[in-house]
Length: 286
Image (cartoon, rainbow, N blue to C red; front, side, top):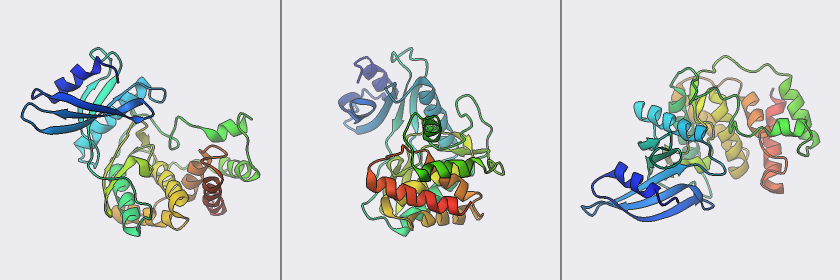
């Protein structure tokens, strides 16, 4: 972590804090997990985000704006402690945020936890808003990737299923019934902190914005189908629909959109096969 960032971090915490340790949360790059000690002997842990090979200034600004919305509406998310969006103090755009206590997802996942994830997502989608420069419109999850287009242009190998699914999806009208809600934009188990069968917080908001609830629903449903099996997505949907007391719209469209926004080989043959099964089910229901 840049040495000149330490002074800014300490200034945001105050109380004569001292940095005790820092470790990267992603391959030697940002974000960084920072352990501090106040002058009174209290331990404080924070997350420092700045530029990296995967994080640009726009993402830093989006993360800060999203965390401000999360605090305003009391969403389960980190709280923003400081932001230097111009980089005047840190040397590059940066934010500092609290750590949500909890753990990662278990090896075997209960229906209760999957429903809780759907319900946590529903709290985000309850917020209606217009796009802005820092929280723009999001037509798909993980908007920085567009693997379907890469395959279409011949920049990435494809398969008969992926080609057929892409053609089938493009023939469908883009759903517009609900497209003005707050979305996380990269909702997967790795960005969800849990405790037992409950969700403690949603983290890493750098791709947040405005769009359809399906942007997040499709992505999380795809992810849990790959990790936990093809029955898992229905519990996520149940949790969301119970929390909102509404029926999710165009879910097959958004499931297919999420599945197509993966690399062809994905994370190996087993994950790709599970992705393909999830995609096939979605296309069959369009």
